Structure formats: structure tokens, C-alpha cells
Image 1: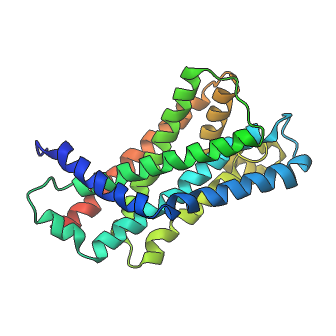
Image 2: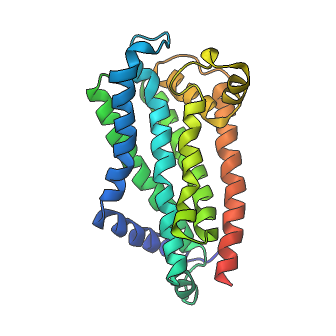
Length: 253
């Protein structure tokens, strides 16, 4: 590893973050859809949905946060694709800087911008009546899981951004990820689903992550869900990292 890797990475992070703060519509756009969905489900559909809880926004919030992350990482794919399209990657790689610093700059920018979006959504949820009995440690655990989930999906986004042939192709991969929480326990208990859909819902990553976050925020036992959630997040992150670095190195040659 280049001994200047961290300083190079901080420069690239600063470059990407300046793009974010000069165009705050990225964060605003990421927030609008999940907040609109939260309003719709709580105030329109909430009365008809039986979840066994008195406060539907408490039940709903973990899934909304995951949808926001899945939506936010598409901008990482877009920004990477534009850097590739404009020859920025080759230009930086011709300079005496760490080869992977640019890629890490995009990944960390995704992490920071998504965390800002999640804070905004949680603040709106509080206005809508969201309440948590969790202490500091459970909140830190929730934050850690959301960070891991964001990093995992961001590395998937990096693959799309580096491999896409068009802007639409680089960004469209996020649509299935946004849809995935709908086939999970994010909005309704899986008990109400048909057998085939229920089997899929109970064995895909979103359900274990949602159940873990929900249990932590309500001070309930998390059981094995937390280990399943961590295994999914770390597994996806490691596999996506390997493929993203391979795709990036091909661009760097």
C-alpha cells in the first residue's frame, strides 16, 4: 500500500464531498422518496396493516432506512461512471497518487452522504411519532449495521459504475435493491404472505437486518437475527469489494 494512501484518500474524499455539498439535491432526492413512502404507509395504509404494534412508524422505520440507502448508493454508481466516461480515472492514475484512493473517496462519500440522509429521515420519523426505548449501545449497534449495509451496497454500486455502458445502465441496478424491502418483514409480518413468497422473504438479507434494527430500537432480544444480518452485510461487502477492485484495476491499466 502506498504510504500516502490515507492522505491521498482524504483528498479524493474532499473532492467528492465538495460535489455533494455544491449540489445538495442529491441528498434531498434520496430523502424525499423514503419520507413520502413513510408518510403514505403510516397515514394512509397504516390503519389497515396489522403488525401487532400500536405505533406503526416504529415498525416501519427500519425498512425505510434501508430503502433510503439502496436509493442513495445509485449516485455512487453515477459519479463513478461519469469519472470513467470523462477519463478522470485514467488522469488520476497517471499521477503519483495511490491507485485506489479515487475509488475509496467515492465509497466514503457514499457513506457520509447516506448517513446524513438517514439522520434527516429519523428526524422526520420523530415528528411523526417514532419513539425508541433503546440506550446508547443499541443505537451504536444500529448505526454499525447501517454503516455495514451502506458499505456493502456501495461496493456493489462501484461494480455497476465501473462496468456500466451507459448512465442508465450504471444507475438502474439499484431498482431491484429498492424493491427488495417490499418482499421482507419491513412493511408487514411475513406470516401474512403466501408460502413461496414467505420463504423468500424470511431468507433474504433485508428481513434479518430489519428485524435486528427493530429489536434493538425497541429494546427487545435480537436472537440470531443480528448474526445473520452481520453475515449478510460482511459477505456481500467482501465479495463486492473483490469484484469492484478487479473492475477498477482494469480501468487503471
